[in-house]
Length: 348
Image (cartoon, rainbow, N blue to C red; front, side, top):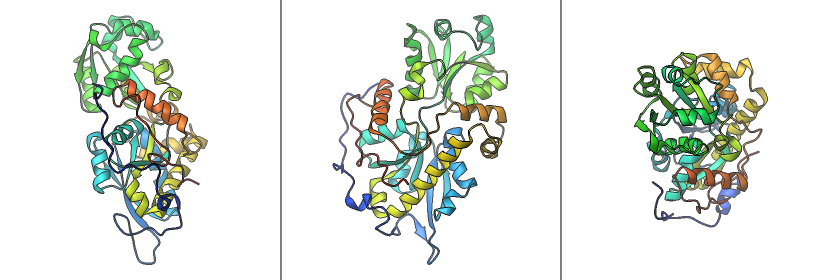
């Protein structure tokens, strides 16, 4: 349910202080990022939400030694979506490879988060139906979205969150249907998704790739809705997808480290943009995704809009606010301000 009131946002200012914007003029301090004497290398921890292709830029930055080239040593910490913001604000991680949806929720709560780079545009959602359900309703991967939406009336679906269910509703509403006309079970992990689909406990589920395509590759289901045929899920209608997040307080204390990290991520995104579809890129994803077929990884990567550069615009964030308010995470009048909530100041 959409919040009835706007959260107070403590400590916000009209713009990031001069200390933050004067990147490179202030040496990185100690705090949570440390440097060995004379080594010039900072150690930081980045929180990631599991092994999925959305965090491909982190894997690329490691494999291609972009982090090392920028003088930082990075440790990955796998976090559940419910603890990402608290891990960042507590200082147990210094950066997040996070989603714009979670970031906007954190901004609305006034947690002091700051986005310093964009790593993808949009979210590669997929709605997959079981092969049993498809056969019973004469559906195929080429069935029209309207036919799929109407067939789902009276079905049982699976979803990991209210916002995911709301994303399904954006698709269904285009065809005069909504999830109020079906049952939606709460499921917690990709493993449960596929098992529930295979055993016919559910007829469909929706989540980000590669899980839907993996279910299709295993013969468990058929992907019938994606950003390719659902306008509401198209990248240009979602805005930033995955982003690089820190806190304003950390950026003020460690501007050099933030600059190094953001630029390493920027280089990784450019590499992906320039090498999408290559064997080398699939190799990097496969090394971090045991058990997921290479063709699934390759297709999942192709469904993400990888920018040529990590820079963001006010128009993109306005799009993100509009989309995220439609799935009841934030209010539509929420403001996301350059300098206060996001900045390109650390990018090359």
